[in-house]
Image 1 (cartoon, helix red, strand yellow):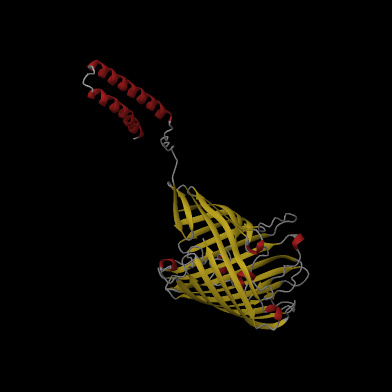
Image 2 (cartoon, rainbow, N blue to C red):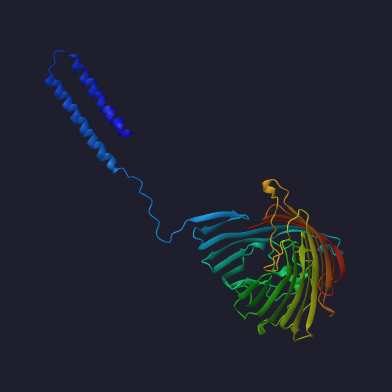
Length: 453
């Protein structure tokens, strides 16, 4: 268009010159022809100059052709975060994260120091997971709760099929596969805290350890075996503990609306000579964020290792689920008789809004429910009522405590990845040593807001 405007601008002087010439009757035709030729030559020169200028202007280069094997990236939004995948499906990448914020109030204790109102972050995690090719997968997460940086799940893995069976193997900092609650992620437990079977019948290193794990999956069952040392603690001044752990679960009944769950697990733990010190346990009974409200084992000195084992029985029918768990740990001590203590829990839940309980028949652990009517879409979300009784007894020795707790709760799932929780807990403790000796009881109300993806 600019080109034509320039040409039109050049033609106007020509018209202005030609018109007077034509108007003069005495002008000769030879003079008129000379003027026309001169103007035509000038227009031709301007056109040539314009072509030269336009040739110097950079024009957009054509999009390069895709090389062989190149792929577009597809993004699919789900459960709070996008999953990026290649067009040919050869790789995927997904950010992971969770924010769990709690408030805790305890009252009724005969010790004023136990009657506290506290707040805390149960988890502040950020990480990623992904797949490369048909078999390779990975995950990494770091937790920033309590103003500390703690590496949690961090591993590489390989998965595949053997006939009708699936398997995976992973190496890195691995989460325990031990009991139902102990194998459930902190953002998926039906209660604000795991039961005492998961928190007390546990290796000295805790829920994570660096090592390797293999899992085999069938229709309605799985078996796992792991060999791990300490978690990623950065302390290389002494040998790690060594933990050999195994778990299996079986669903003898599985239908679209019901499942029966059976499970067994065990671990053998060897502690290094330099760690033959105290393995005292102080287990939370009325919420995580009251450090004074614990059941203590008393001093378990000069421990060489331990053996732990437990059983699981439960399942679901329609929107109702129930689970019973029990476990025992035998701690080998040199300076005193071996310590044996046990824990048990009975829990149940009911999705009032009709959702299917998220007890996985593949892994034997709880996941997140699929909300039928998300609040973000104008629905009422998913509502779950829960109840639990749990008991912990550290044994008959004069220094070892025991106690129990009864919990009633309500969970409101606004959608598949946002949840509000409220637990009311009646508890009783009987510690034989420490700052809070003797029988004590009270009540705790604790609440949580969480988002996880």
